[in-house]
Image (cartoon, rainbow over all chains, first blue to last red; front, side):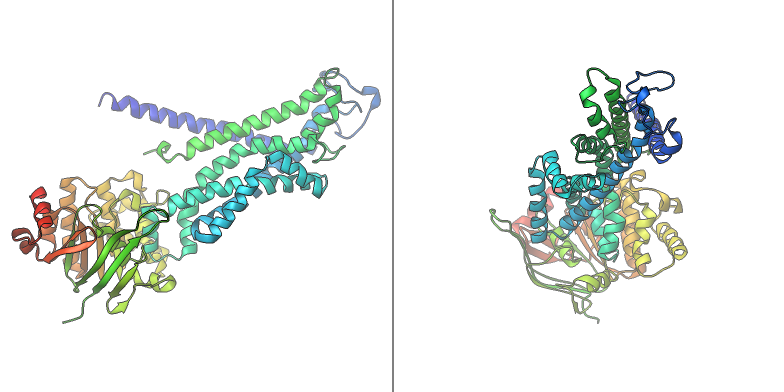
Length: 285
Length: 253
């Protein structure tokens, strides 16, 4: 008893701490998303207005992040760029998670030849170095944010298909799935009511953790000129535009870099918190 | 007298995997269960008892042989036919907690077959509470999750789930094996009462010959996939014909 009580206590503390983290990072993520949604009204200056007489100013109370080589306010550009970077990433992750889950569940549930074909296909995609393949796809499709998202989606879904398939295989054999069958539920209902909720956890966590990675890859493609096109404000392309000035005007690279760093961090930590919160053993007894 | 509720003829299951030798889990099993009767199947683990249960409930595909339920052949039933089968046969599983979806309440699990039978949500709720009460659980258990109930409580809920649509045959696959000895007795008592009240036939699969003794009308002994002995519990326990049965009895009694 004496050892059991503190252990239970600790678990409760962990659960409480986990919930607090979930709320904190959830709130920060919501703040980022809201900021992106209302970016136009949040910008102190017009992010596209050039003023060559005020070019390359260092950070000051007026221009918090300084100005770039065309005299555009960097803070405004970072805020305006959040829309493309954050919404683009969320759209991308939603797309690949949904596509991968559908393929994975289908393969795992039906099994047999179809399963083998779908999984070899996803192996083929996984065998390519991701960003290189995305570069090729984006190169073929042409530049632009939409094509960059499509390129990254084309190479990123197999990870989700793998997870969804292995989870489906594991859950399919569990006693409660047999019980669901015995209740006379048709297969569609069993998949919807019993399978998907039980495999959603790992997929959701992977998706949350992927927001950070995908944000970087999307910025990476933009940096290489295959994503958002200048003068559109997007963090990756902003870094690319200023990369020649890195040694002389470092703030022009720091501003979008810091924005990427902070957003990636917030979404990664939120992903961690979601993973802990979804662990059924962490739930209250 | 009516025909048998369950009739199994020459049932065989062979598990084959590429690169591995075939495993004959059930070899030419033939037996019947009459309406209202309780038939026990005993044997050590790996003797094929559970495989028989899974084939009867169509959770496993038989390799050969035939299964008739209430005169209708069900050996290869699929789709809607198989769903209809579950209005006549139900199963209680070995793992009580794991037999409920961890993300849904016990009430959801108990009521799912009623919901599928077209009952309204309110009627399902009411019926679930009644079924839980019949199985000795307070109505509040309908809102609990499996991890919030003990193994015995989950098994009572599982029995409530199994009797919800009043099956003619209840298959209990080691339904008491995962429970404490005292709770085992309670669950057996509950099953015995329900069997009387609902006039339900029962296929009771168990490795503990002592439990089978009071509960079953007849028993089969399975060994390495074959039925090696059959008779009333008294006959089998008092005068076993097979060496294996003697060993099985000696190890328990």
